[in-house]
Length: 161
Image (cartoon, rainbow, N blue to C red; front, side):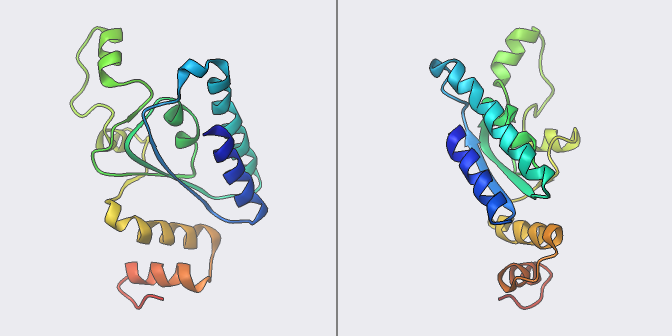
């Protein structure tokens, strides 16, 4: 996964495109050992270079988004969107509860809880993601691309492309 994500980031940089990554993962395959862990650093490094050169990155967190994906490229976006009720975190609630030896707050690691804590920027229903992403990309890039502007206009109640 790390190599594919890195290549995607590099492609977006070369073409000066906004980058949107939909995240849905139960975590990396840790039986791969250090190689798996290194993918976290590789993807974050590529994203840092992308953002340093003005790239705009949106992460969409779906259910579940856990493990190394959360600890790396899902958490460093310019804008982080999440689907309602999505489970988002590094380790699962059961593991954390056993480690801390205490009960967790209601809704812990759900999108709504993370929105309250500032870890997620917006919660967006899947049916509304296309329009929300188009609006964000148009705003961030100052786009006059008819397709992007058309989708954003639909969101404002105007005519779409």
